Length: 496
Ligand code: HEM
Ligand SMILES: *[C@@H]1O[C@H](CO)[C@@H](O)[C@H](O)[C@H]1NC(C)=O
Image (cartoon, rainbow, N blue to C red):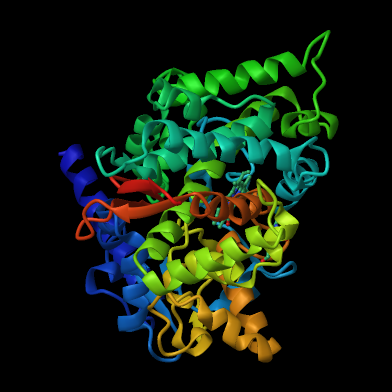
């Protein structure tokens, strides 16, 4: 009897809770089920197409007065660039929502991503910034050059096809080996060695690919997240270090950290050395090395892969970019390898980099912000406590900002607006939102990522030609906050 009463009470409570949740956001349109349950949002996350479904929801339901749609009880998605920039502003009323706690890699320890408290986050960022910005790191550019050379050499020695030999290569993988080696070299002064081994060392990539989708789905279920992060369940939940794959890489990172603390600490001028110098505790440094590897590898790998895919499937762009590079080399404006400063002077390259980022933003997690007071976004009332997610594919393909052909890859659009500085600025600002612009949450790895981009396309395209093995199946791409991409099989040939 008591059990029955209990169940009945719970059922009534759940119904009331749903009805209340529904009525709070009743004035905002969205998919029908999103008004009542999390199922729409969860299945979108698990479908591997979340970023596209959010943009579609904005298109379909968010016409009037602006691109905003309901995606679950207590959740909306906003696709308006101006509004998002306002939300991210320094003194706005918005904070990171509880979702970010799902980005703890150790269920009991915060890192730069999972720190919700604005002030604690700001303090942490100020200690991390000098390292990420490169000022405290010796030979930042040389270190990246060395890894670019490693990528070139891997393709040159093992994957060149000729008239008589066919050696297709999954470029998606090799590019990730490259970004993993870059970030580890900068982070703790020694690359993990993916390019040299030409192998998914320790099964790290395989493991992150299978754990990230689950982790990101968990972040959407607060009660579940709360449970697994509960100190009382510590004995039950595996430690990051014990998960095969991630654990091994985390182990390497933790060992690097261990050397820097203690009685006779190793002092080095790398990012970790900078963190130590700016007062990170050993535990904090451990957490941040994991962040570096996870935040710094998939993202820039996706930028490089997708931009390369757009280049090699657009002959006009491909020819023009290669011509710009060849001319620069001929006229001595491009060293070997190209410097960051030289890359800045190649207008078409810069247009291609921006257009590539625009077409395929690498970091698409929902990144929800909340306010503890009622707010207005896109002209509609957002009740206090509502999660406001972003939809990068909405504002990056906005016709208003980029023109009627916003859905196509056309780097020329960046050159043509140079006569209209205000327009150019808006376009640039909009693309740079991919790094979460503003001073509160901006990507700390932006400089590193941009150096990688400024160099990689040039060093590859000055030497090689690329074509898809099967243009009807260019790659496999699964969206789980970052993109999980593979099977980008290409034929690489040497240019004469
Ligand atoms: C094209 C490549 C990249 C893109 C598009 C990108 C994008 C982003 C975005 C959108 C955020 C903000 C998340 C939020 O709202 O909290 C972020 C944060 C961050 N990114 Fe990146 N990222 C890239 C590359 C990198 C690289 C190479 C590194 C490491 C060297 C890195 C390290 C970080 C860190 C540490 C944060 C956390 C900042 C904080 O919470 O204060 N990212 N990134
Ligand atoms: C890469 O090129 C861009 C030009 O668009 C330039 O603004 C930037 O300073 C270069 N390097 C870095 C690290 O961002």
